[in-house]
Length: 235
Image (cartoon, rainbow, N blue to C red; front, side):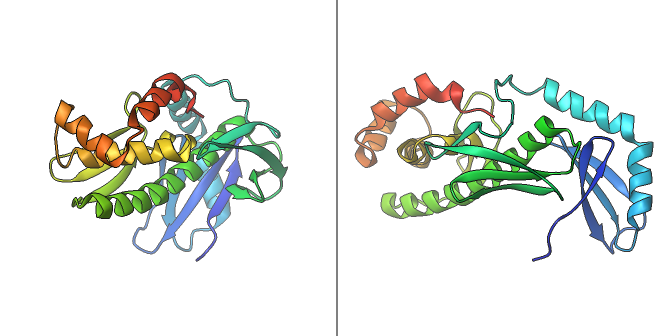
């Protein structure tokens, strides 16, 4: 697999996607990340010029994204702790050619260009890591519990919900809030079982909760944990 290509310009880092299917470059801002889709052979000097020309537009879009995000006390500096499956891992910020967040040897590691906008870039890099691993973990757990519960589902997706942990449609499309994977493993299991039980009962009736209890006898403890600790599951 080819390593992702990044260019640093005007205090932000842009992900470069090259393709032979287009003739002109385009810039998108998704979840605060700058992405430039360019013709395969376009040289970096012209990409940097494009970013310079669109600098104010890019900064305005990024600012709007962060204004819409929940407030956080995180400073995104070395030594700060971030949770994954209930365990805390310290962040190590390195300087050099940009490398997105990875969990290596018990630490989150991010490498940045010197002078880059550290807080915003580290946050987006960690968010991308969490979303990727949430998708992997939820797919694994849904498959395992669906077999145990003898239910059929259609798809598993990840979203950034503001006020819910998951959702399940009547067609069997299940989505989860990526933030759940910050919680202890048993809590993640509870959210998975909860949503799969909606394939049996599409409400929160007593029958639904009896079904949850059948597969997770300690569900009330998990439910209470989320009630009291859910607000802390935040970048």
